[in-house]
Image (cartoon, rainbow, N blue to C red):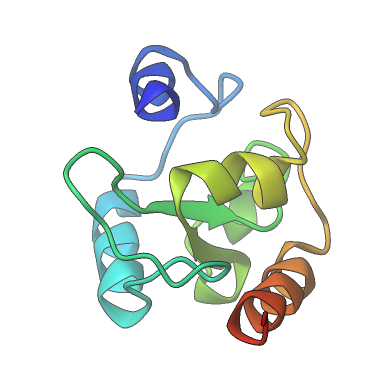
Length: 109
């Protein structure tokens, strides 16, 4: 819940302006990918799923709306897997890492 509150009050766009089409693209992505790519959690009122840009859109604005640049993550995994514990950073291998940890979680004893 703390991560959710922080996300409301902090800007992670680093001054970049979102496309007017972002909300439509985000909604379509969540309909197609309705669970966290790491833990398979679904969205909830206190922990809504987040759409993460694999290549950050403030650095690569041309990729902001590309479905191949998006991955669904829960708030915890958005920070941990998507940003390597710092929203000032990003994980260039986020899809591979999410897939790895999803397999590990599914195969745990």
